[in-house]
Image (cartoon, rainbow, N blue to C red; front, side, top):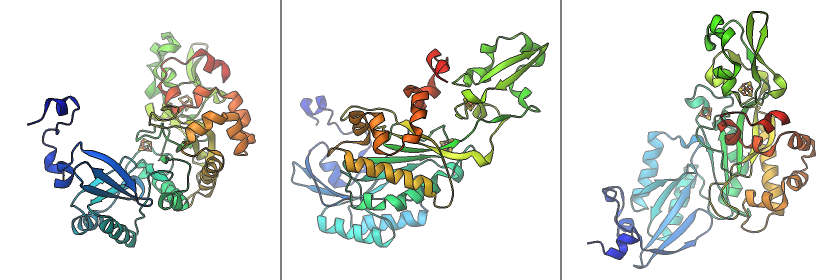
Length: 381
Ligand code: SF4
Ligand code: SF4
């Protein structure tokens, strides 16, 4: 029976969870007192009962997609060398649990032979998450899993050998919707249309009230005007005709109009990515925050995406060189300030962009979540 104190500490085993857990984890539920690292990718959890569980963190392919056949091979390793349990992490890694360091090292050897690196934890790359994009999604701008693969290859030593000031998480999103996350992360690569969409006059009528009603309705009541976060879409009246127009200088290529109406078309030549930096989910250091746009557009050139890889590697190097030990990228930027960070990164060419675009407008979630467009954003653009 659960003691009243254990109940107060919430160390009461969740109903029906035990059937998913190996005996050793179940037996030590709420009793873990310490942990030790054994190189990157192997962690030892120590219980007050004297039991030990070792976790081996294995990197998965982009979008954490594997075949059933590969999953079976991992399950075989977990049965043969582990305690018959695996865990899927938020960063898209697979953790295999075992009960001795010797077996943990053998698991590492085995999965590395299968072509899957072991790493993460501490001052290391913890993983690169990717949304599905072309794997299943209908609205992708760029092929995020392919970009993830190119980045993963380039940053692999940071996963398996560490050497970074603190934890690093990266996210690649196929479009500005960021539906799979990536707003609160150290570095986000976000598929981005590099220029405003064009309005297809022959079909835009489908997304607007009928002409007679349109002539009478107030601009602020038009749905497409409402969804545009910067006031780039407005009604122009010429005589008794009313037309929806797009003011290119005000457009931030967020694709919100296109998400709501198929009469907006982008030019494939403009396809690229925005690079966001300085977000984090954890409430450590200076607290949680959203990433902000550092570079509004870079070309996305398959198959190896050299420009994107070079910029991400460069940002990591600047952080590595100048951050204090244990300082996440977000906390480092906060300490030195954005202007200094841009200078250290040698990105003076984009400094004007920073001066023109208000800071809050560079935070994706923020400006996309606004209902009414704030006056200061309209004034600044
Ligand atoms: S972020 Fe965009 S591209 Fe990626 S899955 Fe979501 S909607 Fe599709
Ligand atoms: S909704 Fe976004 S992409 Fe469309 S016009 Fe407005 S700012 Fe531009």
